[in-house]
Image 1 (tube, rainbow, N blue to C red):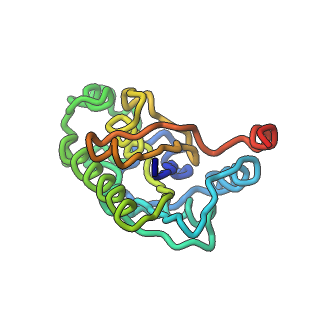
Image 2: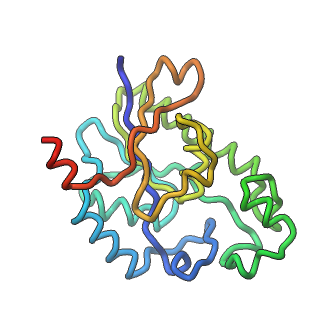
Length: 214
């Protein structure tokens, strides 16, 4: 049975991430420490290889594009605007300590439809991300591209996994560290009946485990 492998990777750290600030669509680069950590991760672990049957996709954010450029320096990438992080409006750049008393913040953090002042509502965010991801899967199926590497913000990956991945889990349960993510498998027969995909493993992979399997 034919299937498609998709590797979902969260971008490396920025200075805002390191300060504990919420970072939405503000376009900032990786921090020096984030870049060092990414290079260390690349040396210590195995990331999905790129073959002639692999296509790279990225959110329209510098931090995502830089992460892919480090991991796959000789590969082209396609920008998917729909995979952008949620626009946080007045909450952009604020910390939990600054926001914990704001109306709607507790509901938003828990995954409910809390309103972000001047930002993107949950329904709009979820709709555009899902449209972009489903469009990417359709592209893979129609072109015969059997593998894809996707770099996106953590909130986007959590939404994708909670919406489509099996076994089922909440958004919060799909949180992942910087430069880490998930390998998932899409089987056309199942996807066309109900958009669902199998969560296969965490990535990157441990080099020692790979050696043990050989």
